[in-house]
Amino acid sequence: MNTQAPNNLKLYALHGFLGCKSDWNSFDPASFNVDQIIAIDPFQQRSVDSLKAWAASFTSKIDEPKTHQNILMGYSLGGRLALHALVEQPSLWKAAVIISAHPGLTDEEEKKHRLEQDKQWARRFLAEPWGPLLQTWNQQGTLLTSQPLQRKQADYDRITLAYALQCLSLVLQDDLRPAIAALPFPILWLTGEKDEKYTALARDLVYSHPHSSFQVVPGSGHRVPWDQPHLFQTRVRDWLAKIG
Image (cartoon, rainbow, N blue to C red; front, top):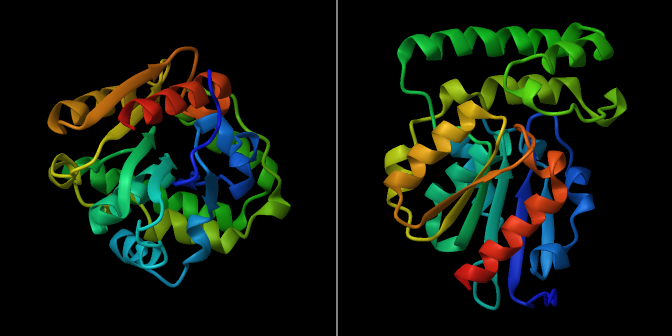
């Protein structure tokens, strides 16, 4: 297969809650047939207090696609932020890859439960010892489908993590399903075979958005890019080639 990267595709990549920009270092541009991978730290914009404000700030820094085309990729929380950016400025994007991300809660009782849960986690990330805290975090149902990634306390600012849990919470996210259905470009939804919850969510979204494709990655849980890196990059590369 020809892996010569085209010179007009920029792939912007957003990591998840406990992610780092370096999470994307194991993927080079040629592995996706793009010219450049631009890893974004979504928490640099701590001055914003909502997902919509985050999207407005982020998209204001993205160059208009004149001599290049922009692809947006996001995982988990980064995927939710990516969805907001796609809706905020659709004209900036040629396509998107959304990995294990939630389009928005619709049940009010579920929202109340999640709000209290996020507040508790924010308090814990501010105060509790790092090692035991990570063990507890990784025992959550969705994350149990994947192998935990190594995370060092020195790589994080706890205040920033608490900010993300509160200001970028799923509870504060609108139900984006109607807006997603109206987007004019293709979206690839990726979920892990072991991640039944997010697989069901993505499958429903594909039915409502005519430009969407949906793929389940075998042997993977929630953390698709790092559970099955070779399959992940192959699926993304082949899909980008297909949409031209």
